[in-house]
Length: 170
Image 1 (cartoon, rainbow, N blue to C red):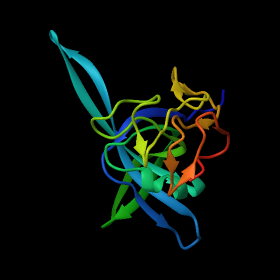
Image 2: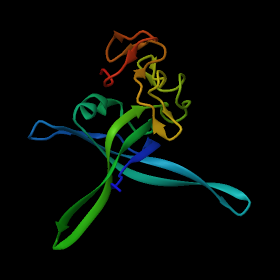
Image 3: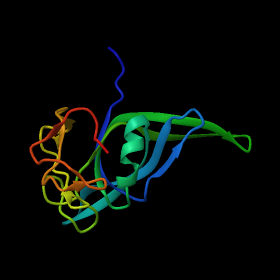
Image 4: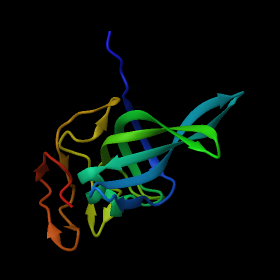
């Protein structure tokens, strides 16, 4: 049987993304998300936060970096990667998630979750409709769609029934 390395998460950014372009011309975006897990402690339910470091490469890093701000809810589809290095003669390692697909979901703190309502970007709302929303543990692979057709990225109008099938067009 072949090996499997696949991660799907929904969480909120713990800090603004750090964006840079490498000397090779490749864009890279580094950020962290917090994913809450509810567990029962006696008669009470408690939230336990888990934190994950994410790295996003290429075209998505270039187009999404300005929207990856602290508190923003996102969906991640990717794989685990172990970075190894030496520091002061000691071997070090760190597991990070290498994102293959990132989807903007709900809004920032205090805004409603995924699906037409939260997530205001200059008057537009990312609805996750059109099959591109996270559902049932897997990304459906459909396209991206935007809810109210508001202004996006400096005045570009996107009709509410428009489907994007490749990448988010920022």
